[in-house]
Image 1 (cartoon, rainbow, N blue to C red):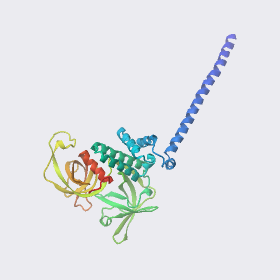
Image 2: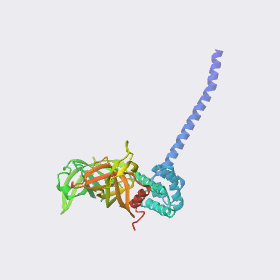
Image 3: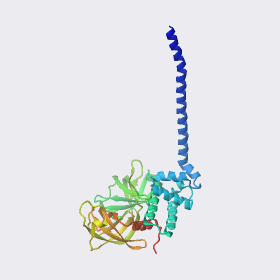
Image 4: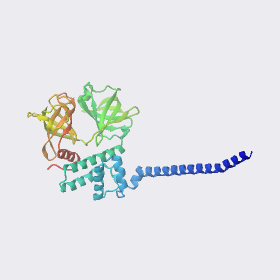
Length: 369
């Protein structure tokens, strides 16, 4: 009995210690949970639209730069350049500023003009354009389009018919239950258009080149007035809107003549798309540029050139009468009238200075003389 009593006394003495340890652990857990909750609330508040609106006129802080850098996924060199720009021009809260595309472009334009005074290397200017485009994409990610109600009048869509010919349809009006799209006469009166009440796909791009696919349904076709044909599509439930592509450079419509030549491979083996692996064929052919970016372009010509080939392209851009690049044909399509071939190409070998001139033209940083 004495042994049992002694054991009971030991357990009695140990239990309070165990309870105290458990209580301390639970207290620490609760405190940490409360701290985490408070930090999440602070973080949520600091990233909310209301907080940004209230602090938009505050000077840019290091924290603002860090938040923007994380959002835009900037490299260390790009972060360094962004800091330099903010220190030099002292913009208001950069977290708010990137929501205004014109403001961020203007800020980078100022830096570009300062750079040009110091004869920078082409790589330094290229870094600025890379930074600008990432900031634009960051803005675009914050303004992700999730409903057709957000589409403005004038938005252009591309529809590919059964023969894979592209047609441009323009949003005339965005009504509560309908998208009223102005369409070309040959499209409205031809047999390549989607049938009434059928579902069909269109693509469209935002300002910085994010590509969306929209699946909707044709409600009816009308000739609203002489010469104005419209396709009326549903904007009600059942539409599907999704992102399919993000370009790596901003693109701009660009209508100018160009010249192109075939190339011959002079080095055997796997092609890497550099000029020293090809010989330019002297004969040149005429083409017409349709759009351009620092990473590629689209142009039309009379020749049925297949995709998957290389060619040499010469074109004017900005103040340059003749820029050039080695290109790879990503896609070839026929024009709607079937008389032209539209080539989508990416630049595989192009001088950094030429890329910069293209970017400068696209953003309007250098005006032609």
